[in-house]
Image (cartoon, rainbow, N blue to C red; front, side, top):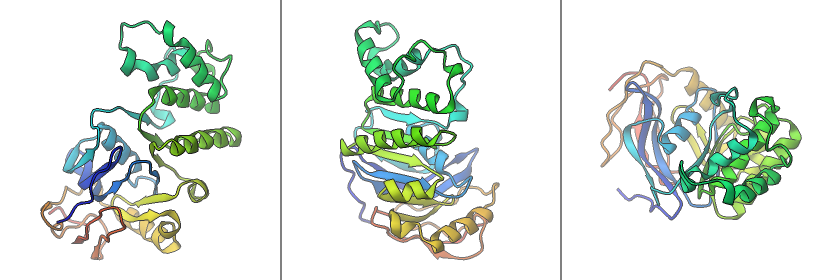
Length: 285
């Protein structure tokens, strides 16, 4: 089997199944996210978008297959969903943004020499003068801007964003999209889980449509078709939450299995290294 080469700054998903307690949350992902890609993850609620991001960053185990990354020791900048962050913790805006320097400074080195860089990052996201404000007093949009300042200071080649625009106003969304497009112009690899398909069509050239399995992956106009979106909804509705992982021979296609819907089909090569595999979803193989 010929595999797509992994380019510098890229991510490869090789027969990947991710899940919890041996139950898959997303499975049979085969493909490559090339360096410098601006990729949207879309799909119904519970489709596995957050799970995939957490798998790439190492927070969810691989039940099968693997994730390959050029420069595996290089940091990944990761923005979780807003409701996963405890805003009651007594941090100032400056403290929160400064956490982006943690990998370089460690626990013992003084922040003082880098204070100017932190203030510059806060200025970039429109939070000049907010550095001493407790994070618990910020609006949703202000808090998200502070998190983006932290991302700036991480200065990573790969940036993962989980619902970055949820619960923020239109002006903040426009400012953050401009920042993302700037990162893309610098050649960084950006993967964002999103719900707003209009935003995806306007700003993200490639899209992976998930419904616990890949439905379509490629140029956004070719992925976000009515037929693909309807198929994603059907698969997601039929998913069996108690299904076990299915066996897979990594030298060839997956064995027949089921996870919820009752029609056999094949994964097609979308130009990202995906390998065809006929299967049925519903039983534990």
